[in-house]
Length: 593
Image (cartoon, rainbow, N blue to C red; front, side, top):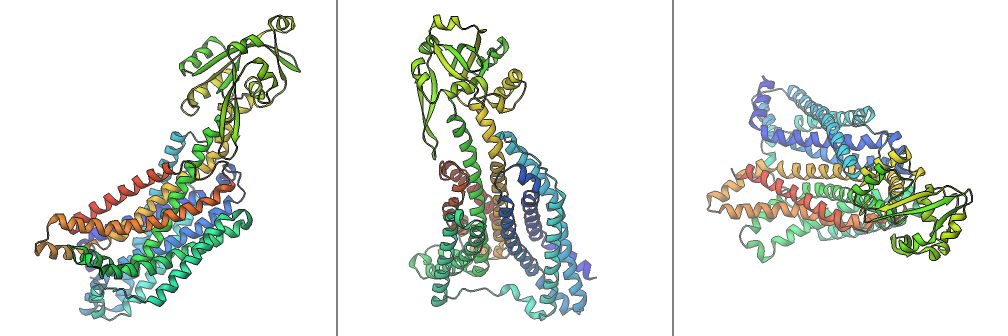
């Protein structure tokens, strides 16, 4: 009988259960995506040269576990709030508490296990899709990575099931020890914020000090090493929560006292935020951390992606050099529409390579001179024969002939002296396209046909450097972009779940406003403002965290981690705005029926 009553309650509130279930699926899916990297030691070792990367992922696992605990805590609280009234009615009609306790525990566990299993499957699909998209769109080289990784699946399953067993026991104790009448009216008790200046001032001071320590430790990671990451993890999480807990409550109370709160529906919007203010502070702290992790990871990933062509272009002015290129290979070069294409004749011995000076005087050879190693700024220099003979950059010519290993010295002779060299004449064809990345597929095909390998050690130029740097940085670039997308999905899941979980309870408030003559435009405006505040506040804190957190990556990035930072910020802002629009659209459909 109790099971039938429980199913009736489920059918009545299927929309709320759908919000809960989808939120838990996304949470476990994102957790699996992270663990697919964190637990795959072969992937971490083969795709990055940073020895600390395994420890960094362990710290990341701790942080994600904290976020998951808070998320499941909210999900369990939401499940509990939906069932309190139902279980209170069951008690009033004579149901035994032991039976109700069994039903509570079983329901919590079934929801959690089902959501986790589906979440792992969804996470596997997301991992496969995101990795395929990144590898193909960015031209990455990834080794020992698999969308399905059994240790990650087991870690996710055991972790979530364990948490839901504990949550079920908590629900059992909480409901069976609460009087029936209190359960019936539990959702009618608002959590009104109270302004306690001394306590909140202390929280602000401690929060600012903690965040300051975290920022300092990230900036001095070269000295602190792993301890710096641990200190930053603890202090920034703690400081973020304290600041939100103190400032957000104070802000809501202070704004309601201002004259503008009496205009239109401003007072209603502020009251809506105040009604669940304490719960919002915890969730907004988590969202701010996820915002910082997602934006920071995407920024670093894109930073490595932007750094690769800079390093390639600073190595040589030409994409590749071919000795004795065939007619078919010259046609392949022409198909790429190179901006520079020249052929130089030479004769080679073991100690020197002899060129005709006249050919270099007619078509000067371009060399690259790096001006700033940290920013990888450079200038292209046109060299005729005499200048190239004396230049320290003439090794760039030999790279195009012999690959990375330079085995001979270039010598520039007159036509008469050149003809006297008793060696067979050969041709060196050099060319430069407008972008190595744009033409990487054609360059790869050309390298395989001429050198019979794609190994950059066999040929020089920008494409060879691109291949080597891309091989070194692909793992870091992939990790940054992959985790950035995963954390962004987790951020959206957390924020949307928190907002939509209260939509059903808010419905009757908007119905009351509609009955007293409030226009649809005013109601939509109130919704837009309320949800915008919940998106903007963690966004501001997250951006500040990112700007300071990028200091950590000065150790592993040749260029400044702030180079081209506007691009990932703009992309992320667009995605964040999209999530906001989706959230208000769903929320409106629920509360403005």
